[in-house]
Length: 139
Image 1 (cartoon, one colour):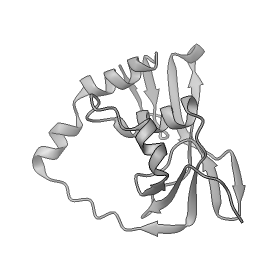
Image 2 (tube, rainbow, N blue to C red; image 1 turned 180 degrees about the vertical axis):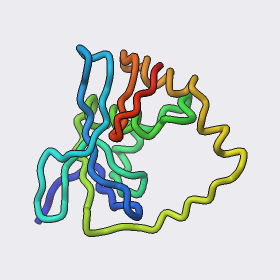
Image 3 (cartoon, rainbow, N blue to C red; image 1 turned 90 degrees about the horizontal axis):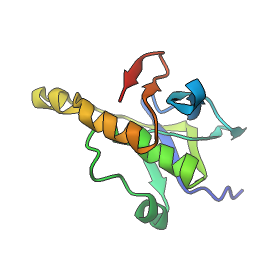
Image 4 (cartoon, one colour; image 1 turned 30 degrees about the vertical axis):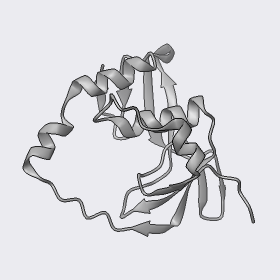
């Protein structure tokens, strides 16, 4: 069976569930939440997946990660891929990889730079982003 996908992800350990983007507050806040657009067996179409994925080379060349956004880049890449480029994105729930995340001391400080979050949000006209657990970050 052929699905004509642009990006196919696998789960990363317990994470990597299919995610959707939904506008809130008259489009000033973007909500990133669990969900799927459709499902065939264990393959779920969605807007955002883990960073463990296969993609068509021309897809990555066209969408690319924004070089100016050093943190909070994951949601911004998939927002453009799904909402602007309208790519076909899915995750195979029955496949996973082990993500052995090693927390280096200086890495935490680099991840917490709000100026990059602000860049990504403002680039798309958002004031804030709501995470799946309900937490809200502002531009």
